[in-house]
Length: 161
Image (tube, rainbow, N blue to C red; front, side, top):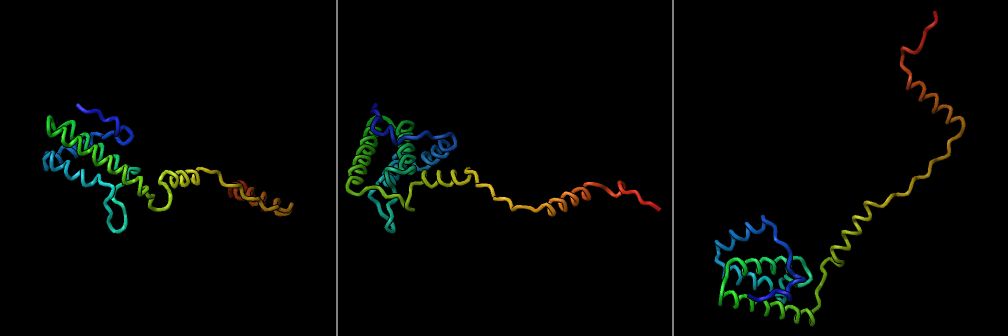
């Protein structure tokens, strides 16, 4: 069989939930139709409403390639396998060539990782302590008397007759 070293940076693990979903989808559509649709999704030169639908730098590209390879390994053999493997190599090579001329774009301005780190760091940083207002001696005495009165109950008081 063919080796997938050229895709090692793009393949991610597929969990059991996703595998079950993929199996149902592939059985329902047929492996060839499923892979034909994946080839369309993997095309990085597609632009819809001014946005590139797929880029090699994103998670969706990794997910699509991983699902494609999963289908190849589990549902195709022989000549069909070879043809779809070559189609994957061709689309990947054309995507990399396309991105040499049209560099990938991070929509939203910054990488998602950096915005996550900023949010995380913002939440975990200690906030500076507020400066306490200076209290006069009279105010301290009043506060301590209030605390003593609040802490004591009515049974502590003795009434003189």
